[in-house]
Length: 257
Image (cartoon, rainbow, N blue to C red):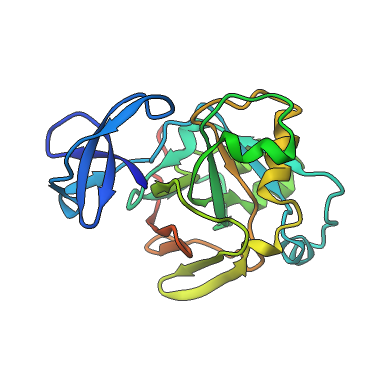
């Protein structure tokens, strides 16, 4: 089942499900009891929002060995976690804004996991019980600031630096799916999720040993090699086999004095 958040005409944002090229509203608690209403709204007539309003965004660094090598970094012995603020979230077709503080902003194509059940000290074998579904993410990064600061909050935390979408797929196998990133149609990144150093189950278990995972939290699982710059006027597309395509235009952010 594909779950979206959307806005139709002048109506308030809503949660829905996708059936072919139509959308039906979802009533109730998405992470509890809910029901699907008739799918009658044309998908092409709605604006897609971020598919979940995340309480926290947990990210994983250097979870693909080739990506670690392209930055002359060691593959970590345990998952390398950092956080992005929920204010970084944008949806499909929303613009990534390049901040004036950075001269080198890069794309990072990633598989994202949406948590559906509260958990702490989750065992690896039970991790699947805490997954609501999967979606596509772009962990946009100000690379020059990341290297300058030696920690990643500023480089990863700008507004618009976490495109997510276009929807959540609840029936998806993350074991061996191809991740691709194209900029203006040119291939930049391509790898399989089987190349992850730490699996989704491992990451959920590790993260939950540090912090309580709650419904709606998002876990970004790391990016393959091939990250590269984004410039004003670019269009970046991140696709994952079985999940769809997340597309975002890129523009310069005007400095507000």
